[in-house]
Image 1 (cartoon, rainbow, N blue to C red):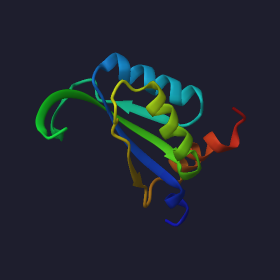
Image 2 (image 1 turned 180 degrees about the horizontal axis):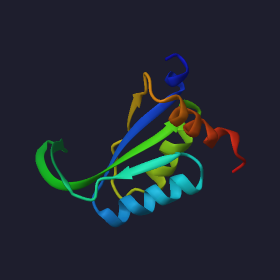
Image 3 (image 1 turned 60 degrees about the horizontal axis):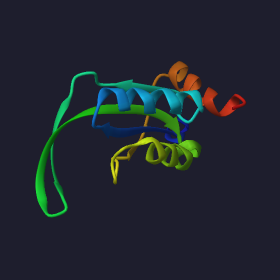
Image 4 (image 1 turned 60 degrees about the vertical axis):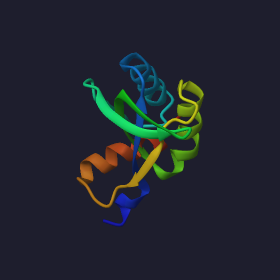
Length: 112
């Protein structure tokens, strides 16, 4: 279980499916994430923004990466994202399949 703690799941929402696909492709190409799942069905978001309650349709990206890649991943998401303040929520992975975690670790072992 201890080894799993070096891995992270990052949640990012986007205003369009096209934007989500662009971000996902770029971060995987740059080996900042091993995998990005894209919810192709919009999620409904209700949130407070600049003192107003807003409601919108967004697309959820679920990125799998390592703790070492987080800062660079966040910079790239912010660079590509259309939102002024994009969601970038990091969750620590507490366990998982050894084979899957080994596969995730490969993003740090391959040259960029």
